[in-house]
Amino acid sequence: MSSRSSSSRAAMRSRAAVPAHTGLPVGTAPADGPSPSGSPAPSRAPRAASGPLLVLAAAALWGTTGTAASFAPSGASSLSIGAATMGVGGLLTLLIAGRSALGVLRGGRATLLSALVGGLAVAVYPLVFYTSMAWAGVATGTVITIGSAPVFAALLERVLDGTRLTARWTTATVAAAAGCCALALTGHGGAAAGGNVPGGVALGLLAGASYAVYTYCGAGVIRAGHSSRASMGALFGLGALVLLPVFAATGGPLLGEGRGIAVAAYLAVVPMCVAYVLFGAGLARVSASQATTLSLFEPVVAAVLGVAVVGERLGAWAWAGVALVLLGLLILTARRS
Image (cartoon, rainbow, N blue to C red):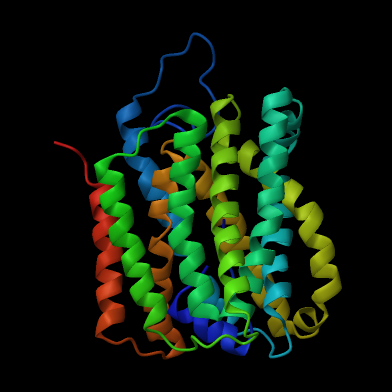
């Protein structure tokens, strides 16, 4: 879904912050598709253990977006940077997937429906996320989006798959979401630029729901037997069909300088394309609720980069928020005895 913490707030004050941004049991499907018929089944224990690490790696890359966006030209809008990241990056993800992504579209009615709904959610996410921050302020838009995504993912699993919400997941999510609140609400730039706080909160909830939906749909495509690369390629390729025209209409100032082109290229290739390849591979090994909770590692990375690179200063409450997020991730990823 990817983007969104202290460094994101600094970026939005000058230019933009870029997002970031499933119900699949651990070990259900290989990241690169099912094993050939008759071949020995791979051990699921190492695969299950690697799933959280892949999602955390993706979240770490998403955490670089705010710092990268701070180097964009002053005239570049946050909407253009978001559309470039998930539009151009989505097209690259489709090209990497190649024909396997087309196989998703020919995979039957249920798979096609998952791909179309997921692609629509991919297109909606950056548009409503950035508008949320413009209307309600970066801090409010960010915390609503990040904090609500794991809840929406768990509700999707509960309603559509009948998955029970475990005490372990609940504890981890509450701790991590509380940490995100502390990070967002104790940082700088919390005033709303547009002055429409209720509307911004509503769009933040829609952004969190959109992220959860495309994560859930991506896992559903994987569960149907397609590789994670094909799943991400299909969803983000479909999303790019909407986002690229938005980028064409708004991206002039971003592409008017070499620095802006470099920022757009980095955001499209690394936090978008590479990160979502990693995210897709992790999604083949963990559930939607786990994946969205693990992605809360992103604001921790962004906060650290904000201090180390952008020059922001975090107070005691913000560092307590970092600790809470890490605690939640530790609870979720610690191996059961």
